[in-house]
Image (cartoon, rainbow, N blue to C red; front, side):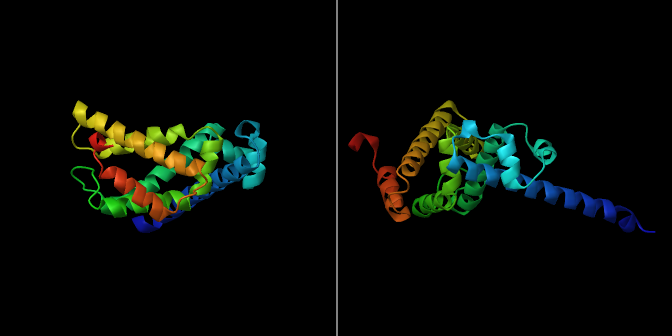
Length: 194
Protein backbone atom coordinates (compact mmCIF):
# COMPACT_ATOMS: atom_id res chain seq x y z
CA UNK A 1 0.00 0.00 0.00
CA UNK A 2 1.40 3.44 -0.95
CA UNK A 3 1.55 6.50 1.29
CA UNK A 4 -1.05 8.15 -0.94
CA UNK A 5 -3.54 5.39 -0.18
CA UNK A 6 -2.84 5.63 3.54
CA UNK A 7 -3.42 9.38 3.75
CA UNK A 8 -6.18 9.87 1.18
CA UNK A 9 -9.13 9.03 3.44
CA UNK A 10 -7.92 11.37 6.19
CA UNK A 11 -7.28 14.16 3.71
CA UNK A 12 -10.70 13.86 2.11
CA UNK A 13 -12.30 13.59 5.58
CA UNK A 14 -10.43 16.73 6.66
CA UNK A 15 -11.59 18.60 3.55
CA UNK A 16 -15.12 17.37 4.13
CA UNK A 17 -15.10 18.61 7.75
CA UNK A 18 -13.65 21.97 6.69
CA UNK A 19 -16.33 22.32 4.03
CA UNK A 20 -19.07 21.35 6.49
CA UNK A 21 -17.79 23.92 9.01
CA UNK A 22 -17.62 26.59 6.31
CA UNK A 23 -21.20 25.86 5.22
CA UNK A 24 -22.40 25.83 8.82
CA UNK A 25 -20.75 29.19 9.53
CA UNK A 26 -22.21 30.61 6.32
CA UNK A 27 -25.71 29.41 7.26
CA UNK A 28 -25.39 30.91 10.75
CA UNK A 29 -24.15 34.26 9.40
CA UNK A 30 -26.92 34.39 6.81
CA UNK A 31 -29.53 33.51 9.41
CA UNK A 32 -28.37 36.28 11.71
CA UNK A 33 -28.45 38.86 8.90
CA UNK A 34 -32.05 37.91 8.08
CA UNK A 35 -33.07 37.93 11.75
CA UNK A 36 -31.59 41.40 12.27
CA UNK A 37 -33.80 42.64 9.42
CA UNK A 38 -36.83 41.37 11.34
CA UNK A 39 -36.09 42.29 14.97
CA UNK A 40 -33.60 44.13 17.19
CA UNK A 41 -30.24 42.39 17.61
CA UNK A 42 -30.53 42.20 21.40
CA UNK A 43 -33.85 40.31 21.11
CA UNK A 44 -32.38 37.58 18.87
CA UNK A 45 -31.64 34.34 20.70
CA UNK A 46 -29.31 31.47 19.87
CA UNK A 47 -32.45 29.36 19.40
CA UNK A 48 -33.69 31.84 16.78
CA UNK A 49 -30.35 31.63 14.95
CA UNK A 50 -30.06 27.82 14.92
CA UNK A 51 -33.69 27.41 13.80
CA UNK A 52 -33.25 29.90 10.95
CA UNK A 53 -29.87 28.43 9.97
CA UNK A 54 -31.12 24.84 10.13
CA UNK A 55 -28.23 23.73 12.33
CA UNK A 56 -27.97 22.19 15.79
CA UNK A 57 -26.96 24.08 18.92
CA UNK A 58 -23.85 21.88 19.00
CA UNK A 59 -22.93 22.96 15.48
CA UNK A 60 -23.48 26.57 16.53
CA UNK A 61 -21.25 26.28 19.60
CA UNK A 62 -18.60 24.39 17.62
CA UNK A 63 -18.28 27.53 15.48
CA UNK A 64 -19.27 30.51 17.65
CA UNK A 65 -19.41 31.44 21.29
CA UNK A 66 -21.64 34.52 20.91
CA UNK A 67 -23.77 36.56 18.51
CA UNK A 68 -21.06 39.22 18.52
CA UNK A 69 -18.54 36.66 17.27
CA UNK A 70 -20.79 36.06 14.25
CA UNK A 71 -20.76 39.78 13.54
CA UNK A 72 -16.97 39.86 13.77
CA UNK A 73 -16.88 36.99 11.27
CA UNK A 74 -19.15 38.96 8.94
CA UNK A 75 -16.95 42.06 9.17
CA UNK A 76 -13.79 40.02 8.58
CA UNK A 77 -15.26 38.43 5.46
CA UNK A 78 -16.47 41.81 4.16
CA UNK A 79 -13.08 43.45 4.68
CA UNK A 80 -11.36 40.46 3.07
CA UNK A 81 -13.67 40.72 0.04
CA UNK A 82 -13.08 44.47 -0.27
CA UNK A 83 -9.34 43.95 0.02
CA UNK A 84 -9.32 41.22 -2.66
CA UNK A 85 -11.40 43.30 -5.09
CA UNK A 86 -9.25 46.42 -4.56
CA UNK A 87 -5.85 44.71 -4.88
CA UNK A 88 -5.63 45.20 -8.68
CA UNK A 89 -6.03 48.95 -8.16
CA UNK A 90 -3.60 49.29 -5.25
CA UNK A 91 0.13 49.98 -5.40
CA UNK A 92 1.77 47.12 -3.52
CA UNK A 93 4.65 49.25 -2.24
CA UNK A 94 2.75 52.30 -1.02
CA UNK A 95 -0.74 50.90 -0.40
CA UNK A 96 -2.16 53.87 -2.33
CA UNK A 97 -4.69 53.66 -5.14
CA UNK A 98 -3.06 53.31 -8.57
CA UNK A 99 -6.28 54.20 -10.33
CA UNK A 100 -8.38 56.24 -7.88
CA UNK A 101 -11.55 56.25 -10.00
CA UNK A 102 -11.62 52.47 -10.46
CA UNK A 103 -10.54 51.92 -6.86
CA UNK A 104 -13.40 54.03 -5.49
CA UNK A 105 -16.00 52.65 -7.89
CA UNK A 106 -15.09 49.03 -7.10
CA UNK A 107 -15.27 49.84 -3.38
CA UNK A 108 -18.82 51.17 -3.73
CA UNK A 109 -19.81 48.21 -5.92
CA UNK A 110 -18.68 45.73 -3.27
CA UNK A 111 -20.46 47.64 -0.50
CA UNK A 112 -23.65 47.79 -2.56
CA UNK A 113 -23.52 44.06 -3.38
CA UNK A 114 -23.27 43.27 0.34
CA UNK A 115 -25.64 46.06 1.48
CA UNK A 116 -27.87 43.74 3.54
CA UNK A 117 -24.92 42.73 5.68
CA UNK A 118 -23.81 46.34 6.18
CA UNK A 119 -27.35 47.37 7.11
CA UNK A 120 -27.54 44.43 9.55
CA UNK A 121 -24.25 45.45 11.17
CA UNK A 122 -25.53 48.99 11.52
CA UNK A 123 -28.83 47.80 13.01
CA UNK A 124 -26.89 45.71 15.52
CA UNK A 125 -24.84 48.80 16.46
CA UNK A 126 -21.78 46.88 15.34
CA UNK A 127 -20.73 48.96 12.36
CA UNK A 128 -17.86 50.55 14.33
CA UNK A 129 -16.04 47.23 13.97
CA UNK A 130 -15.84 47.98 10.24
CA UNK A 131 -13.72 51.02 11.10
CA UNK A 132 -11.45 48.93 13.34
CA UNK A 133 -10.99 46.33 10.59
CA UNK A 134 -10.50 49.03 7.94
CA UNK A 135 -7.77 50.65 10.06
CA UNK A 136 -6.12 47.28 10.59
CA UNK A 137 -6.28 46.37 6.90
CA UNK A 138 -4.86 49.72 5.75
CA UNK A 139 -2.09 49.60 8.36
CA UNK A 140 -1.14 46.04 7.44
CA UNK A 141 -0.54 46.99 3.79
CA UNK A 142 1.49 50.12 4.60
CA UNK A 143 5.24 49.78 4.28
CA UNK A 144 5.87 53.20 5.87
CA UNK A 145 5.08 52.80 9.58
CA UNK A 146 6.23 56.28 10.59
CA UNK A 147 3.99 58.18 13.00
CA UNK A 148 3.06 60.64 10.26
CA UNK A 149 1.97 57.89 7.87
CA UNK A 150 0.06 56.00 10.58
CA UNK A 151 -1.95 59.16 11.34
CA UNK A 152 -2.51 59.67 7.61
CA UNK A 153 -3.91 56.13 7.38
CA UNK A 154 -6.26 56.69 10.33
CA UNK A 155 -7.38 59.97 8.77
CA UNK A 156 -8.19 58.32 5.43
CA UNK A 157 -9.83 55.26 7.01
CA UNK A 158 -12.03 57.48 9.18
CA UNK A 159 -13.07 59.60 6.21
CA UNK A 160 -13.84 56.52 4.13
CA UNK A 161 -15.78 54.92 6.97
CA UNK A 162 -17.92 58.03 7.47
CA UNK A 163 -18.72 58.31 3.76
CA UNK A 164 -19.74 54.65 3.63
CA UNK A 165 -21.77 54.97 6.82
CA UNK A 166 -23.64 58.00 5.47
CA UNK A 167 -24.34 56.18 2.19
CA UNK A 168 -25.69 53.14 4.06
CA UNK A 169 -27.81 55.35 6.34
CA UNK A 170 -29.29 57.08 3.28
CA UNK A 171 -30.39 53.64 2.09
CA UNK A 172 -28.06 54.03 -0.89
CA UNK A 173 -29.90 57.13 -2.16
CA UNK A 174 -27.01 58.03 -4.49
CA UNK A 175 -25.89 55.70 -7.25
CA UNK A 176 -22.46 54.07 -7.31
CA UNK A 177 -21.43 56.47 -10.09
CA UNK A 178 -22.63 59.49 -8.09
CA UNK A 179 -20.74 58.31 -5.00
CA UNK A 180 -17.61 57.72 -7.09
CA UNK A 181 -17.83 61.25 -8.49
CA UNK A 182 -18.35 62.82 -5.05
CA UNK A 183 -15.40 60.92 -3.57
CA UNK A 184 -13.12 61.74 -6.51
CA UNK A 185 -13.92 65.43 -6.14
CA UNK A 186 -13.09 65.27 -2.43
CA UNK A 187 -9.98 63.18 -3.15
CA UNK A 188 -8.65 65.75 -5.62
CA UNK A 189 -9.60 68.86 -3.61
CA UNK A 190 -6.95 70.01 -1.12
CA UNK A 191 -8.41 70.80 2.31
CA UNK A 192 -7.03 74.34 2.11
CA UNK A 193 -9.37 75.09 -0.84
CA UNK A 194 -12.57 73.97 0.83
